[in-house]
Length: 258
Image 1 (cartoon, rainbow, N blue to C red):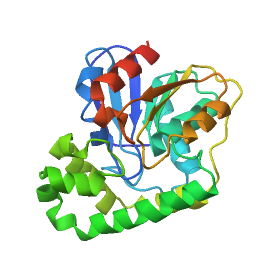
Image 2: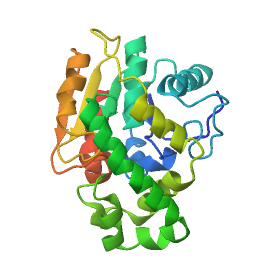
Image 3: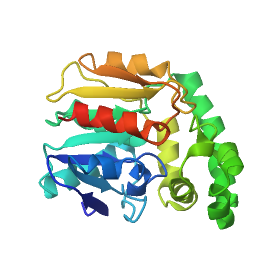
C-alpha cells in the first residue's frame, strides 16, 4: 500500500497514525521531539492528507488492512505504533491481530455505547458541516484564539493555546478529505472495537480527562477489552493529548516504546 508519509530522526522505528480528518501533519506538536530519539514515520491514511482513497469503502477493517500492508512493505512489521482517535482504534486492532511491536492508543474510538455513539454523531457531524462551510476562511479563523476556541471546544481543553498552523491543517482535513464522510459513517454505524486477552507487545491506552469526543468513561471499557493494557490519564486534556499536553504525550510515547 503506497501511503504518503514523512520520515524523521533515527533509532527504533515509531509509526504515527492520525485520526478522522487528520493527516501526518496532525502530529506536528510532538514529531520533532519524538524524532530526537526515534525514527518517526507519520502516515497519511487512504483518503486523508496526500494519500488517495481506497477503491473500496474505508471501513476500519479496510483502513487497518491498508496500514498493515504499508508496514509490511516498508520493513516496519514489528515497529512500535502510536495512534490518535480513529488511528488509535486501528493500532489497537493491529495489536488484537497479533502485531509484535508495542502500541500506544490515545483516546481511541469504538468503545462507546449506543447513547454515546449517538452523541458522537450529533455533535461532530454538525461540526464537520460547519467547517466545510467555513473552508475559504480556515486560515484566518485558525489564527484567531477566539475562533479556535469556538471551533475546537469539543476537541481541545485549551483551544485558544493551540498552534494556529496545526489547527488550520486539521480543519482543512475535515473540510476536504475524500474519505471523511464514509469513515465518519463507519465509525457511527460500523461494529465496535473488539478486544484481546493477550497481545505480543505491550498496550498503553492514554486518555484526556476532558475529552468531549470519546468520553472519559469509555477508557475503562477499552482497558477491559485489552486486559494486559495500562491506562494513563492526561489531566486537563481533551481528545488530542499530543496537542493539549505535547510534552507529557511525548514522554509517555517514548517511555512506552522504549
